[in-house]
Image (tube, rainbow over all chains, first blue to last red; front, side, top):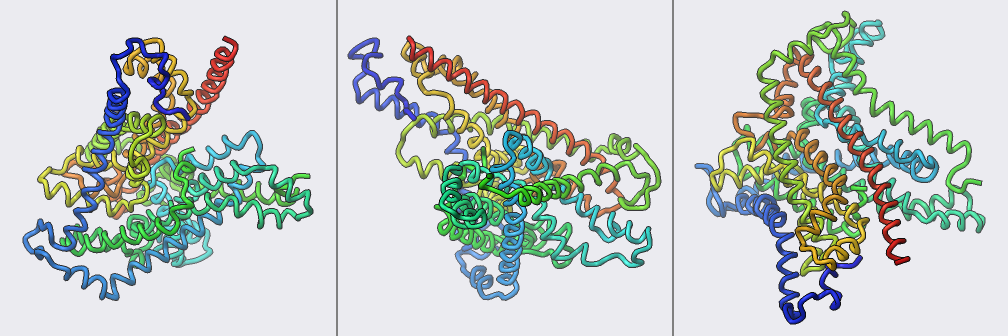
Amino acid sequence: MATDSATADPSTEVAPGAETPVRRRRGRWRATSGLLATPTIWLIVFFVVPVVMVGLYSTGVITLLRNDDYLSLEHWRFFLTSDTYLSLFWKSVRMSLGVSITSVLLAYPVAYLLALIAGTRKYTLLLVIIVPFLTSYLLRVLAWRVILGEQGVVNSFLQTVGLTDQPVEWLFYSQFAIYAVLAYVWVPFVALPIFVSLENLDHHLLEASSDLGASRLRTFWTVTLPLSLPGVVAGFIFVFIPTLGEYITPQLVGGPGGFMFGSAIQSAFTAGLDWQFGSAMAMFLIFAVAVLLVVFGRFLNVRSVAE
Amino acid sequence: MNVAVSNNGRRWLWVMFWVLVVFLYAPLVILLIFSFNDRELVSFPWEGFTLRWYQTFLDNAEILGSLRVSLMVAAITAVITTVLAIPASIALVRRRFFAKGLVSGVMLAPLVIPLVVLGTALLILFNAIGIPFSPLTIAIGHIVIALPFAILTLVPRLERIPASLEEASRDLGAGWLTTFRQITWPLMLPAIFSAFLLSFVISFDEVVIASFVAGDEVTFPVYLYSQLRLPRRLPQVIAVAVVILFISAIIVIVSEVLRRVTDRKLESETTVHEEEVATA
């Protein structure tokens, strides 16, 4: 892709001498920084700086509330030695793992079908899968609450037709409900990067593998799956990270067991009014995400999510 | 022989596909059906068809107020996000500059931040510098999370527009503004439209950041979230939900179809251009 070649060709200079190479380069630099200035400044002021401030706040470099401790690692110490909060973190990690794996397993066969088998209809069918993701998140969770709830559609149906006289308990306010609903929410989003990586696959490789005598299963394991791994990892990460901080869905469908690490952060800022402790937990979450990105970052092709 | 799948496997994959479609759409259909059930609780038994939930929501000032706030926040978000994303994507696609990796990393980073963290971060920022919470503070947060999505919508389109078109315009003496207005903008327009709608939908749907930095005027998702604990209000809330669900689904489908059609058009047009250039 050619870059800013508008002035690169010498023959285009209308007035020779008016633009020296240095001045031209400076002008180009000015144009580029003009393009970048507002979006970059916006993200620095409203994204980078606030995240840094969370770190500063958690250690008391900045204080806002009356009972905040000035320059103190007490909140970090408390968090890192507290069984309760660390186990909440691991509970959220387990939830994210469960949800990401479930979504990938549900999405992969469908992405495979659409990318390699469905032919010309594939984009339309992909749209069918994706549209629910772009409609309201909260409403889709609400739909499941209406379905699974204690007096929800399933339970009231079972009682109306007389199959049970008590609500079936594992349907609502359970880890099952949390995993099912979150997987439901994320499946379309995971299908996208897997679809893109499978679609970009060179089909000749599959034919070559088959010509060399490999069975379909073997071709899948040794050619298709490894080559689609970037899409799988991208889908996995893009579910795993937001789910780590998730508190809305667990609270709505998980009942008392739906208190997650994200809920702890949220309630430290609202109910508990312990902002410094909340900041320490939020910062810890950022570190966890950063570690994940360092480990898996090279597999990530963000672009695959947009296509 | 198909190397990707056997006949049997193909049948199974299609079954899985349709099972997934049912899994994805059934809850929404159920929500739709029960929004017409004449019962205070959203559950069986079916007690007859009614439109009264749809009528009561039109009389509910709180719901209408929150919808108005949401529309305003989403509109501000969509406009500013698009205005920021256009120059950013042009720079990322057409320019070489120092620390490009870092800059594009920062621009896409909001994709991978848990929203609860960004919500708390903005809460601390606005408190520290003394900005009172309002729909505007919500929009500020929404722009941060919508920006990477808007940029990722614009970049592929921009990459498909041959840079030679802009170069030709500059060679013929047009300034950068004229070139942008006459060449780049019209060719990017479908993607700009998609980016605008996507930012709008993202903002309209967002609840976490909005609940952290909302003042007295809450958005519809925040209101909805607060009402979910009161089952008695549920039927009319569901009626609004269904209306919104269908409107947003229609918007998404229309913009996606539009994008496909114009992409195909762009491809055929630019190939013609290149052929003309080649024969000239």
